[in-house]
Length: 297
Image (cartoon, rainbow, N blue to C red; front, top):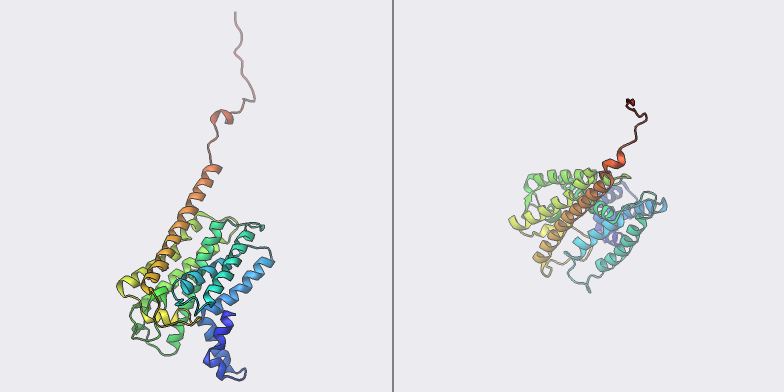
């Protein structure tokens, strides 16, 4: 519903009465540059996974998207903009159900692994979304050396917004996306390895540290308010916006570190259980042939 409502407000779709080539191009760019469309398509993959009795982290990742960005940061009024709250309630219920079901599939996953996969999927969608937005600006003739990024690696829609360099931001987006995709691949295996345990919190931590650097060095820019979501009725001023920006960034960093520590402790405990030393007395086998000393008088 959220994605369809936002698409109905797009001027390009209202002005195009027929299914023309221009409409197809506008629709493709809209899908690539709108996070709601990304999550809408991921919903179908989640339904397919549940139908095939496979675990899925999509709903948990969608809950992180709605919670950290749409509700905690960019929702200026619960009464005036209730849609993010309703989305959070819906995705939270689905995330809890999907997490419980993931523990009863043939390739069962623990809650920690599901949360780690969800965090990396959330970061992967964010990084790919920002990459496609940067590509759209480049195709429209924008000078990328004059553009910047702000919170959540969001590229500025114009050269007047303050932030870090967009060229460096694109490199960081690619690195973050590769790390998140690698973590998803390793964690989706039947038996996750220590490589997954070491990588699971890296991509969310990079995003959190990027937000902290942006807030310290450049402050909050209008680009993060104007182009991060595009899915709610966003005002130009938010109550306690700096406090909320710091809070969501720190919360993401704490989640990344805590997830890595808990998974590492669980993996270490499991390794100690499977590799415990058996007493030597229990491992000594009786000799097959016994040699006797001859009896002499």
